[in-house]
Amino acid sequence: MLRHRKALAVVAGVGLAATLATASAAYATLPGGTKVTGTLKTGTKLVFKGDIDSVPITVDCTSFSASAVMPKTASYSIDLSAPPTIKGCTDSTGGVDTIKTNQTNGKWTLSVTKTTPYKLTLGIPKAGATFTSSVVSGCTVTAAPTGTVDLTGSYNGTNTDTVSGAKIATKGTGCTSTTATATTTVVFAPSPGKPPF
Image 1: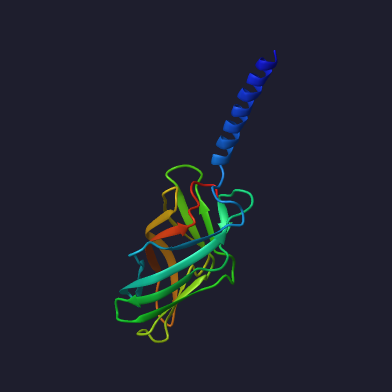
Image 2: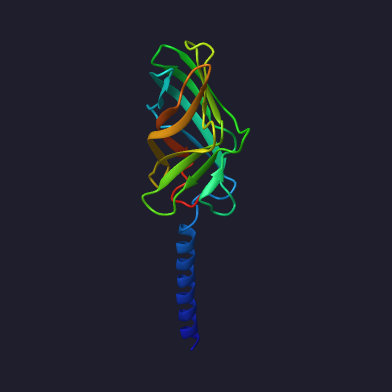
């Protein structure tokens, strides 16, 4: 009888361990409080394509960095710790460009879908970024001028987000601009794994 009880206890223990392992797999692979940083995939750039005064312009940026702290409770949406930084930008007109980000009208956010194929979305708050070029005097282009803009890419379920031609509403001051697109590949470290985060 004692052996029987021990055997049942072992079986129950194995079953509980399997249940806990399965439940844990459904949640973030990183503990709450872990800082995760997203940067450009090695050898790639962040590319914007738009228009200023009806003239097409392509902007290449060599540096992008954004970070967030993993929540204590697994979630499909989190706020970035601060607006992203975008540097090393030049454009097809020969200009050196400055992109400034802010959170005056709200936080930058990151959200992910619950099922595959996973989609990862960077939410730009209203007027959350501005662009100026050294060769277009007096022109400032504002991204998301009237409200939040979502940049959605494909997330591989491990650590990489690939964005291709995501649209950004824009507005020019001292010039005209109506829309732009963004293309980039961002790698997160440490790897957040499958959602939720």
